[in-house]
Image 1: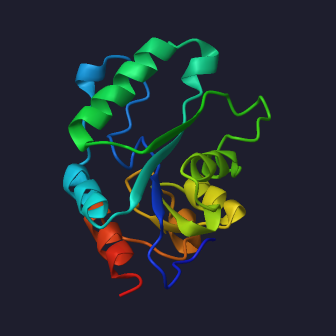
Image 2 (image 1 turned 45 degrees about the vertical axis):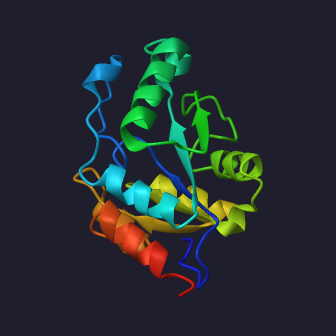
Amino acid sequence: MGSISLERPAAVLFDRDGTLVVDDPCLRDATRIQIIDGAREALARLRFAGVLLGVVTNQPRIQSGELQLCELDAINCEIERRLGPIDEWAICPHSSDLGCLCRKPLPGLIFAAARRLRRPASACLVVGDIGSDMVAAARAGASSILVPTPVTRREEIDAARTVASSLDGAVDRILAMGC
């Protein structure tokens, strides 16, 4: 898995569901979004430190037709309204059976976000709540921090190089880098 480097990352790429917002597999209405406690403050601390912010998220309900692009756009706009500006959104709309290269745990989303942020993937750090976030980071050469939730499996926690108990704790570790 990707490990924490000694230098502060140029960009932090967050998983969306389960990391920044409560995972709701039926979410279609932007007004029903539930922000993870402390997420707004955690992202504000990184922005203040000059770190670029991105979101890397699998959204297979687009391909299946369960979620329309206009609904996804409204949800992401509402997330950004509540959390503050996000520098880059990288979204995989494909289901796991399609074999795309962008769907986590493959590294495509990490590479795409890093490229659009004009940073190498190795200068990015991924924060997520499940093993596929950590694997995608490692495959891209990025560092990672796992922030477990009730859906995180024990073996994912054991495999992660760096684990934080909260977003705030993850940001504490990130901001301590390079000091």
